[in-house]
Length: 171
Image (cartoon, rainbow, N blue to C red; front, side, top):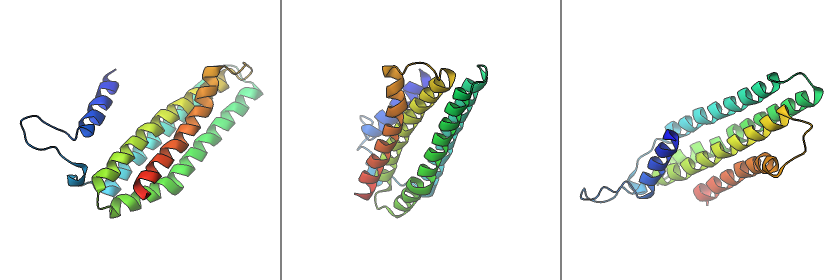
């Protein structure tokens, strides 16, 4: 609950441009100076933390139940998915983000779009982790609507976040 309040305050404040009634004008994104390399480094660390949490969640789901080949296969597929997400982010999106953030005339705007992208990516990774955990813990169960949504919706949200970011920073 505390994290939800913090995220709402962070995005809400930026959304109204940190308007403080009686204190003068709002702070526009164009007035904001952001070090692109620092911003991308922060995202890199956060993204790695979430990927690490994904690996731990999948590993715990595997070790909590007796060994089965189906569960081992589900674990391997989940780990390969984590590696693929790592590769997609660090081989393409991050490099583009660094270049755009360093050379942008409107670094605040780039930071704003990058922050929304990170939020979508984290939500997507949480969904993927839940889908992996369910698949590893219960590989023989029938797929429910909820399982299907998190399993396929998570990767779709990752792609949507990347498209959203690239469209807004590269045009």
